[in-house]
Length: 406
Image (cartoon, rainbow, N blue to C red):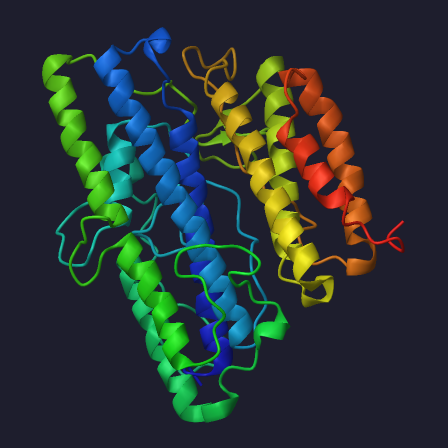
């Protein structure tokens, strides 16, 4: 029973959460990075840090592509797209003990952690001290139980290798019935969004190509490619070491909070509660916009919406991400809490509790209603000199609103 379809769906769902969690941690670090000489960098440092930021944001964009690929795989084998995840930092034991995901500013331990996460199996690296697991909680080894569970894995590559093996076994067991989620079942393809390696999955060869895209871009397996995430982050580390030779006090980022929270912490783990009024308002708006991005992405997988509407949902989500970026950068430059002097705020990427597919008959009107609310607050906080990303997302959806949708 360990090799059933349900076990494969369970493991793919974990992979979706892994990609989503890593994506948020990369964005958080990028938002904290300084921009230009006016923020304390020399001209040379500003030039290099700007390139680092572009690199990290590029990697984050590819992680979004990986999340889309995993969701296509989920739909292809009969599951549902999965954007839900626990809020960060993860509770000990949620993923394997060696797999720690937190929200931290861009400093040397954070960069070393990113390199560790993306490492190929032949790289003998250890996670830096701030990312050591809070507790060693090994998962139970694979068993023949009916209830799916994921075993431990040391690298992301091992997780995808397990998925690859389960896909092969499913084809052996079910043959032509292995891939039951056709293109019409809601997968994303190039006609909806153009992402490298994203294609509609219809059989084992297309499924394995999708997995190859994820692993090759991330870890460069079986050996690190020059353009893999691991290689790009390792390149940043070498450049950082060179800059420190010229300026031992070089600091490329603001002291954004480690593991910020929007509400009073409810457990004993160390968090930074954002309480300063200016930061609170921006964090509230950033999380509300992030919630709408998640809602739009979920809706983009609904085949009932038709290709044009689904493409509009994706386009609107991308526009809103620009607003999240602006707010995330602003938060990293604002004080977090008077009880934490010298610590700035940061977006928490809080997941909405009501995340899920909405009936297409009312989805557009309710999303537009929410965007109108968000747009008013966005303009109040960030000004209206230029049309805001929220307003652009609203216009993108408004012209496609069905007459029956309100």
